[in-house]
Amino acid sequence: MNYLGVGVGVSPGNALVYHGTNLKVIDRRVRVAELVLRCVICGLNVLVAILVGTNTQVKEIFSIQKKAIFIDMKAIVFLVVANGVATVYSLVQRV
Image 1 (cartoon, rainbow, N blue to C red):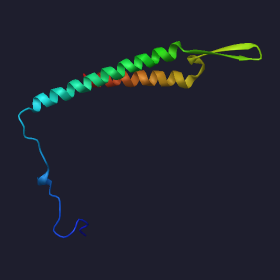
Image 2 (cartoon, helix red, strand yellow; image 1 turned 90 degrees about the horizontal axis):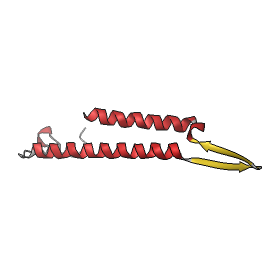
Image 3 (cartoon, rainbow, N blue to C red; image 1 turned 45 degrees about the vertical axis):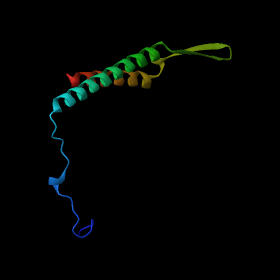
């Protein structure tokens, strides 16, 4: 059954293909852009780890002060570690 109409079809031979001579230049630019993005991600992940690691909160309940740090929540510790592992994998994958 033809859903595209009578006589209308798509042939694999009609795909647009770039046959330019600057493929190496374009490939190099893509690789550099990927590397820059991976380094930006790494820098942002280091910044997040520093901010999470140095952040504290103090809550006062009935004149008792409780100081909370990121180690008190195991989920945040897991997320920081998982984010670091993903960053390292992203950088190693490029090499």
